[in-house]
Length: 147
Image (tube, rainbow, N blue to C red; front, side, top):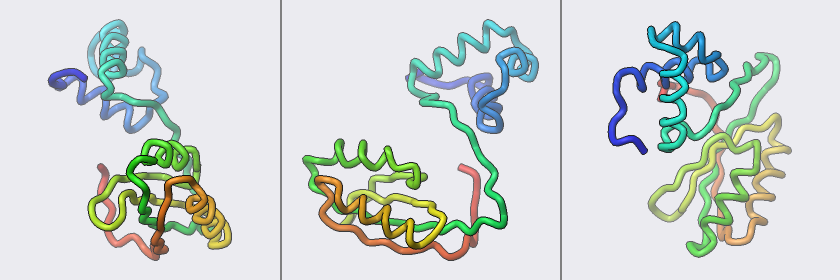
């Protein structure tokens, strides 16, 4: 990982957060530098582990009801890497955190229905190394800030 990120690195990352599919030529123009500079910076950020991947953001149709839930997961410590790998394969899990306290992990889920949510939680409980879960459905977002 690069020791420090300079202003150009931060500006490049900010542009990619808005649209990770921007062509290198457009990134260079927006940053006021050469295409080769952007390519070198991207490679350094990727090699250094600052940029870990590129993704797509899909607009949710307002007519589709989405059920969001938080699931706390207690696991056997020795199985943590396998549990995390198995959970990462579930497309319904949008974020996965390690946490302190009685539970070891916190998964944020998004499903189309409570029936689907129930099925996903059942599959999570079936993963070798998962000891216990505690889930709660999220009702409304009262505050949301960009990360």
